[in-house]
Image (cartoon, rainbow, N blue to C red; front, top):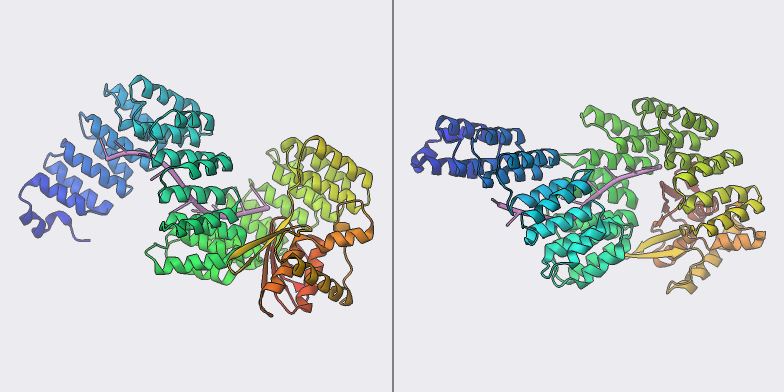
Length: 612
DNA sequence: TTAGGGTTAG
């Protein structure tokens, strides 16, 4: 890089020294430039110059040269309130809440009273700190004492603070309490509602707001996506487009995340093409989302293409690709990629380890799993899952007992799931007792226990569990399956007759049932929870949501086209064996994504090799 | 100089 300050062009053009420095700062882009400029400022004795220091601090901020910003600020003997504010802004915007608050205290100790520009950044820092409610309230008190509570920026910052720290009531109180609300006020409040999972309230505000900008749309689309309501997120995205609002990078990140959740690869591909032909930068967030969308949509090849094409990768990029490979049963490739990641010097985090252990679980790499586990003692939960699903239920339980920390619900859940597969009633009851203490409202735990009793024919116990569920007002998550046809998501629940093509779907199902029987299919009725007769059990199995989605897929797509179905829970054993046979009968590849992994059914077999 | 929206997991 050429030395900026010795450029004859610059020296001759700017006689006035202050103006020269200012011009150089305005064209500088790197830390190297800053060092040169700073040396010159010192030589010329300009380090007390407020105007120049202000510009230099802003440059430090935009190049993330925080240590240099501290150095610069420390050399000013009597900083003005404006300079304090800029320094506080640099710290706050660079995600250093502790330093921000320390500097704020230092400012007050130097007898410089804060002004309306100080508080927004101090409040932002409060929102980023864990013990923030009391701290935030203390600063709120100072805002009131100093008479700034009506400042619109500060008011918005307070709403944002309370909504980010879980005090939605306080945020709403402030929101309701002002006469003039700008678009930021509304956006902050809506984001707060979605963050606290109050989707209805967030939507109500969004519908009522007088004027919306791209951030408003992004907030509500992200809100739905993050609350697991991807079809609504995608609907809003379509509405946003029909209203002529141009999406930006942030919009598309949430849209892709919704596509990944819903397995909507058609919409996802459209977004990918949109990015390529628009002015949107394919940044690291977007690339990561594309990887996730393609792997969850069933196209590992496209995911890998995006990953391989990335110039810069974050830990999230590696995690998404590793989990993608694991999800598709490519355990060895996932492990290889993990090793590549370590060689690239990227520090793995807990999510990486979860991905790697999942890869070992799905590919039966028990020994490798044990080896990696030694590197990740804190990830006991995954190890319990690996052992449990591999059939080593007792060993898994022993491991839980040996754990140096209290096992969480996930660990007991893994053990319970394995007990179901391997029929360990006593251990299952033990796991349920632990689980119900940790998460009394989770219906899944009751359902698993009930399934174990049902599989063993202990109907009295099934009834007891059902009564307990009723008594505690626990509701089971209904199983549902969805399929994307021409960019629309069609969702089915068990016995669903609400679809407009319902008659055709049931005709197809009946036709398939006959073909299945002829091919030697025997229903696995122990997948049915209820205490009903065998024939009724068969009927209940026939109308499972995944079967409805597959039947709809068959009648809505051309012969030979693959069928992709997304299920919110695990695929049941009966649907698994029926789908294997179906893939052969109808000569189609059927790809089912369940809650944990993919099943690629082809020519009568499944990629999971009946182990999942 | 001043506020709001983004990715990966069992």
